[in-house]
Image (cartoon, rainbow, N blue to C red; front, side, top):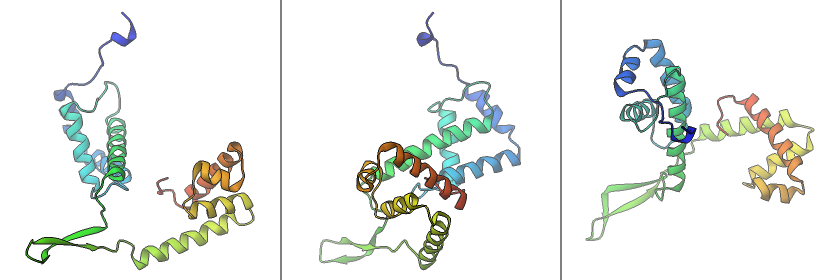
Length: 193
């Protein structure tokens, strides 16, 4: 029998329920912490939402729970995939989260809702961003390659376009990008790339 025709091993719903009911409060707290990490950048989701969606998909059999894996590893892997898909969906969505419809104000006889912009960047966000940029420039000071790369990224130029603008080959760009990402990770370990 070839490996491709081997049936996929997975836990039954009853076994999954049994494992989940044996979770301690500390296990649930770890699961919530992982969910909080992964739901960053997912519009409108909280950690509890991501955890609930993950548990629902695991119990429904939409996500596979393989035997022999630690339950928190299974939850972490499933949450990562669900959050990744939700972020990708948000990027492709035609809905702009910064526009709010006001249902109480209507123009004319047609009762058409009025679209109003919503400010999502607060003064605190601006101050924090400036502080982070100051810290970053202090860390990369004197490294011309990293300074140039930060300026390109700040202008929204990434990948092949940045490499072409800077006149670098792929090897030099990748090396500088990796050094910069390591510096960013040191400054803010919770930052999502």
